[in-house]
Length: 380
Ligand SMILES: Cc1cc2nc3c(=O)[nH]c(=O)nc-3n(C[C@H](O)[C@H](O)[C@H](O)COP(=O)(O)O)c2cc1C
Ligand code: FES
Image (cartoon, rainbow, N blue to C red; front, top):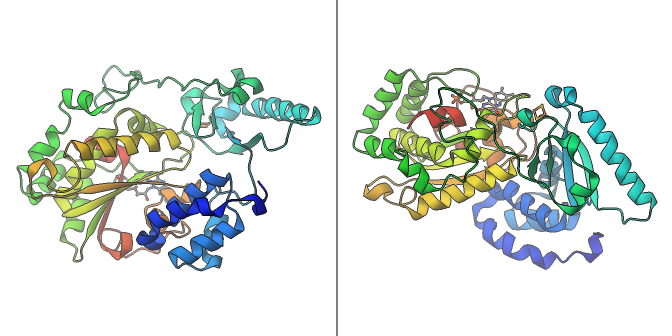
């Protein structure tokens, strides 16, 4: 779409919705701009800069920093083919070659350019489906069996989640390929942990988590109860809970399975964490490639709000807590907790020097508990 033919008035509702949030709204706005135009045009950058009060140079820097933002018009359908080890061994290069040749042949036969954009991507968290790809945000399994025609026609089935465990605790409801509606979650004791926690004092909840021996699942195995205690005792308000769902380590897809099949388990863990440390707000930061999981979490948050588990007076108590779901934009380093905090604040995801640790000065300079998806899922 040439820039002169863009209708920038379409941006107005987006800008009006997000402008009151200021700079922290930068990534959400850029995602919306890209959804609207297929890329981020320079004159949209100017408008965003003006409305958020962030200089054009800084918005430009952000667009350049995050690989999932395009400066040039991309195809109507954007395809990411994973070429990390699992998929490479399963034939990712041959998939890319075949699709690129089909694309070239179509162009040679006179098809309009701009139909498809195909590019390599690091691990997409779909390793059990290798060779994997993502087509316009939708995961695709066994890409070696998908034809160019399938891609263009959009006839692609969502892969069946594969979870086979003899002993399944966290994943008891996973792999059944059903949408985990709140009713189903409740039927399996869902939100009972929160109910019990709200009958205890926050410090009793922290002691319970300490006694459980729960260790962080984000890589460093840091004791979760100790982290919560440090944040609870740190001066400064408001406090925040940040659920790290950036999962981009090649070969990892454990968080993806929980996000798509047990969203309420994660929300319940965040709520209990929020109650324990005295936070009123939580963020979930989901890697940009997990569009489907992002949509699942948005829906789960809405369900939880409707049912009185999120928002003012959670379950009729004096505790209030709400959650905002954020999308990353394709950079591995945003999995590091301080880089992720920068990203939510609307900046490039560069790690901050530590100390201070996030439990003392995290999001917006306030005490913040950053926990991995699986860690929080263990809490209820
Ligand atoms: C480069 C880098 C990438 C990371 N990526 C992730 C990630 O994708 N998910 C995650 O939970 N932690 C990741 N971490 C660890 C986080 O910084 C942080 O320790 C973790 O989210 C804390 O959660 P936990 O205490 O529940 O383990 C990463 C760390 C580094 C240095
Ligand atoms: S290595 Fe390809 S999805 Fe993980």
